[in-house]
Amino acid sequence: MVIMNESTPSSPEIAAKVAKPEAGWRLTYRRLKRNKAALYGGYFILFLVLVSIIGPYLTGYDPFQVDYSTKLVTPSAEHWFGTDHHGRDIFTRIIHGMSITLYIGFSSVMLGMLVGVPMGIISGYYGKTIDAVMMRIVDILLAFPGMLLAIALASVFGGSINSIIIAVGIWSVSHFARVARGSTLAVKGLEYIDAIRALGASDGRIIYLHILPNIVSPIIVQATLRIAISILIAAALSFLGLGAQPPTPEWGAMLSAGRNYLFDYPHVALYPGLAITIVVLAFNIFGDGIRDAFDPR
Image 1 (cartoon, rainbow, N blue to C red):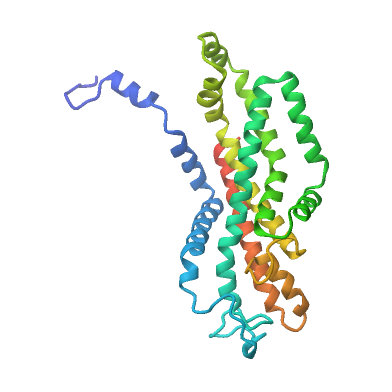
Image 2 (image 1 turned 90 degrees about the vertical axis):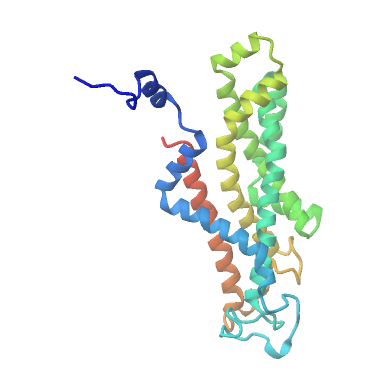
């Protein structure tokens, strides 16, 4: 026999507490915390963003100042990563180049999202002729190998940071369009979308209020993984001379300049290469964790 008192919750209150769904983002974060590697990868990305903002103000050297009296100095207490062939401190240039690298990665992915996601939603929602035309455009972009397409676009736009962003962004459009289209088709087929349409809701309202919020998860996962690829492609373009031009402290350009001293002074190319590897690895690990958190199956 259970004795009830004023402090004992009633059955409706218990049912309300049990039935109350947990916030989606909170549940996603709880799933993400179970993947320690992904969680630490996310924290490390936040640390990189912080360093890219305040790091340039904390370094003691000018990343552009040429000093041939200290050229090709090996790592020491004074120059942690050594100096390059112009006597510039490599550690300082890597810190200054971090903001450029992250800017290229985030901006190119944002450009791909702004173009690709609306294309995919419109294509999946309306179908028929619109779907056929848009998907043929996507197929044309996918017909070219990614790196070859990026090289061709960067060659057309010229060697600069903005040309890298445009080239990598255009390459990313097809990937976001396919993800958005597939997710839109899945949500569009749900019964409650038909019910909302029967109540007289406009297409714009259905897309903005009901379809877009339900396809955010795969888009976020795709964006996180695309940032890592974009950073890698941007570094490759700069390495080939199609991206940031000297003396810009972009990691791919630094790696390209250091290849001439790889045998005698390996530190000139080693540290920019390690910086690229670490950042790309962090985004890949975090992206895998985000994918598992949004879809634990």
